[in-house]
Length: 233
Image 1 (spheres, rainbow, N blue to C red):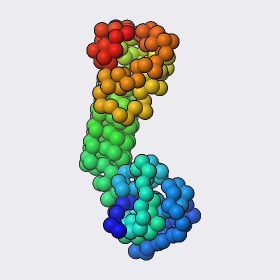
Image 2 (tube, rainbow, N blue to C red):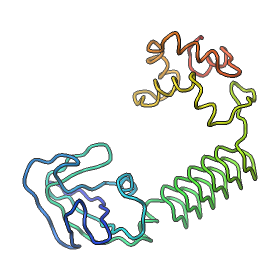
Image 3 (cartoon, helix red, strand yellow):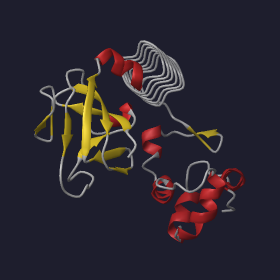
Image 4 (cartoon, rainbow, N blue to C red):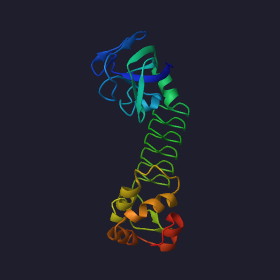
């Protein structure tokens, strides 16, 4: 049976789900493996561990080897025989979960970010592609608000729909029934690459009421909608 290497996060006292571990030791259990119920759990990618643990520096992190049977569900795996190979320092954790430089958050490809999943620089918020933002999802710079593509903004701005400005913010637009039905039908779609492929498969599931809600979106333009989705509405 081949060895699978991965990572495991523990509480500060090296416990996980009430079981205490030690570096260098091997543990084995009896019974049928079942994710979240029976098994020594780990992730093959370190960043996935933080879907299940808070990103705290005081938690212990270790490189492990799964040397028994392994089962996997989504990004979590379980084995019936595990070796705790070595402790990983917080500095190494930061280097591993980021592709950028000098980040203290996780999932950053940019530089000097304390937030998470930023491709920009010096962001304390999350999911920014701009720089020096403390808000989230900004493509502009120096914003303390969310979803801005401008500079030095403290208030949410109206956004464009169908190539024209609206009087609604991003948060307000996401509450529109026409947008919500699109999310409901398409959000968990995993079998297509393009929007046209998604709509080709899912459009028959939309009710007439939902189609009308889309028509009533601000600035609705049937030609633009067709160009993006392949659906004539």
